[in-house]
Image: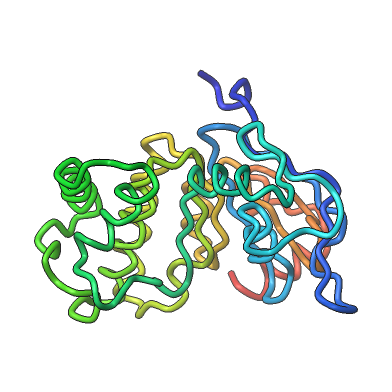
Length: 248
């Protein structure tokens, strides 16, 4: 099925988010279709991460509507739990439990939230570790792994919940350069498998090669939205041109 014909899995309408007197998101509109890879780029402080965090309500929006998989995000705790179970989130920091093995880090969610039997959860975890290319690390603890390996465990952990949507918030920014490619490779394979993804990243080659749409944000607004080809070869807005001139 063409992605243009796929159902919208995220709908964001006129979303505003304030922190005190500072408005981090200014009436943002965005929809993401099933199977689509959307990459959000822009200068530091432009609202990229805040937008991601409102989608799973790590930050509550002040105005507007956010609908994920047909459920509007409100203060209702049950609907919020349902939504969070459908969204995998990978952060800059790996957020693994240091006192648990890699295997246990991955199985704990499916067992507690999805009520999956332990053996089934462990089989799934080993499949996912193979998928991100580190099956031999299952019995180690996070502190024994490199940063790139820890981030791939974080991706496997998110995938273990069988999410409808994966969100990545600058997943390579805390990594040494030689570790970045191994994480991007795992993300590219996810995209090739048809996972719906929203990624905030500074990795322009990834945006160019993997995204269906590139979104450029600045000062809490979506300034430009287009295909990677259009954005990187012929940006329309001056702010986007200035940003690309700085980083390319």
